[in-house]
Image (cartoon, one colour):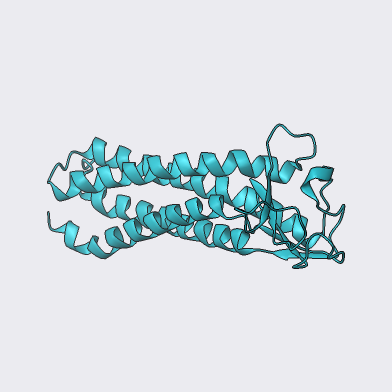
Length: 214
């Protein structure tokens, strides 16, 4: 298949962008440092900083609120809780959707590349695999980008969260800034968008010789 040589670099780039982008989505989901709250009252949050993620709220403290096995105080944010703001509730759902869509999109692309490398050059399977992979990665990037941008907007506007008393969090931060979770999420969305463009480029190059001439 002579056209395979011309797409080798693009295929490698697509696999790299997709794998790294999807891995960063996983990292984003796990990070607690989406929003960094600076607090003025250091009686409980002795470090002066609290981290608000999409699943947990955590901070270091020297106050007698930690057990012997704890190194920081954390409370879980549940989707069903009435205090959970819409941007965090949306992030809990959409980031998991992004993980599933990203896995399916990468699998579809790998299947398409397998057909190309093993000489299974039927037009329909290759076209379907790359088209499905590209569409799934568009949806993956959008599913990750929406909650990331929404939480970024909340940080910029210094929006508050009415945490319950057991969270030991103030009603409002003195200041807040973006954390690594938002930064990594933005980078993951960019990589997934780049992979989408490369996939459609590969699709055009690979399947065009297979298209019947009219």
